Length: 339
Image 1 (cartoon, rainbow, N blue to C red):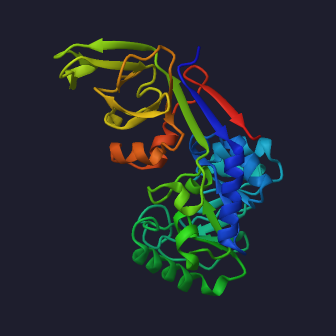
Image 2 (cartoon, rainbow, N blue to C red):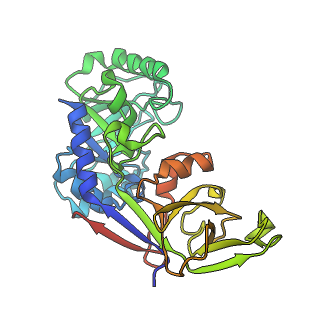
Image 3 (cartoon, rainbow, N blue to C red):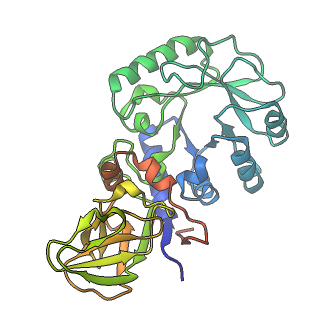
């Protein structure tokens, strides 16, 4: 029996695509499906997004793109990360498009020149005169989710540099900018996190009309009573002050329920309950109000308990929570609905 079950709702993803296309107006939606679709399954997500009108797919590596190309022979696929000579040859054969970040423009493959306007990461310091192989111009916003002032400065730098090249596809906006920064939308927007119904701002996704796509469930595998002074988990980080019922859930940090998520909530039989003690590699402990049956359902993400809640407790972002969930068959059962 699987220790947990992950459910991917492609119907919700399609509705998120429609929401983003509505926001973007005349600008194209390019679906970012890197890192196995942020842990949601790149092939399933790509199929649903393309079917709902996304005009292109974006990934980080040539290897990711080649997997998609085998499934989607006609799709437009952009590799956004740096590439080596061998990868460029494979990209050419697979009809991929590449982001150029170092001034070396490969021949025989469509490229997008990436201007570094303030991210301080991949990108060109200056925009060279585009050659025949250049089909797009792009940049990457550093603070669209947190500092719109700086994001607007980046947009202005890009706009000035790209002004002469309006015949090329210009793309700047990520999910946050697509939702909140109209001047960043240009010809296309590369949207990732919002596709999956996760807030780029760390708030309830419903505030931007988004629906979470991923649900994660498990069960109580053991229930025990702790007497006053007894503890659960490594390091005795939780000790009972009096008789206390504890439920053990067979999910831990090897499954993606991070060690620093102690103190977050999960849902046990429809009610939120606190995770206590140290999260182990393969188990976590939940404080219960009373003795409950083994097998009682536990929702780790879903039923209104968003990844953003866990991210807040762990001091991270929802991207890291969902992309860190291990959905391999040896750890979890994965179910896709709305296909």
